[in-house]
Length: 144
Ligand SMILES: Nc1ncnc2c1ncn2[C@@H]1O[C@H](COP(=O)(O)OP(=O)(O)OP(=O)(O)O)[C@@H](O)[C@H]1O
Ligand SMILES: [Mg+2]
Image 1: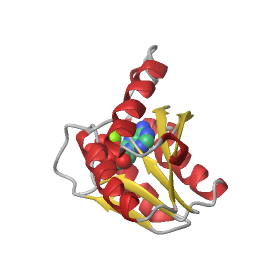
Image 2 (image 1 turned 180 degrees about the horizontal axis):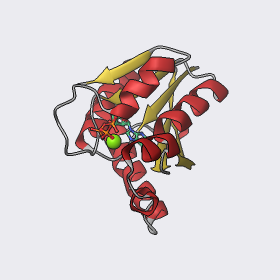
Image 3 (image 1 turned 45 degrees about the vertical axis):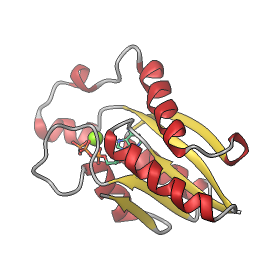
Image 4 (image 1 turned 30 degrees about the vertical axis):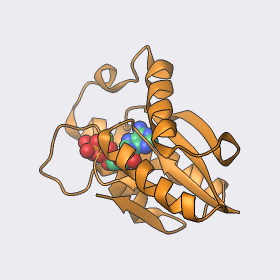
């Protein structure tokens, strides 16, 4: 079995990542995918450095609804039979939570979008893809 961790925030970038993985998985039946969403908690270090007020970055009250939507659009784009897909969501700091899952679940590969939901486009890589790439325990596929 080839275990793949597909991280999604429900953005168009993560949908493209799912479509890329779909094409790979259609050719390789050993691929099994965990679709993973993190409801973002504030990163205390970043919050302190930027002086951004904590409540503004707390997960929205409807975070489980947001998570369910992010997972369902991504699972639909992945288009694999249910026995090859597992859905998972947690609350945490996205980069850290993805890395924890990658370590604990002994994945063969992590798949991410190059950017995500943020409207700021001046950086080439989003902070989550950068954090994951920086400390990943396995190969990472970043889909442009
Ligand atoms: N909350 C999350 N849960 C799971 N995966 C995520 C989450 N946020 C981002 N990702 C993954 O990381 C990829 C890159 O998103 P990232 O958040 O790094 O970029 P951004 O939103 O454009 O910028 P930033 O969040 O740094 O302002 C996404 O396409 C998705 O695959
Ligand atoms: Mg983001």
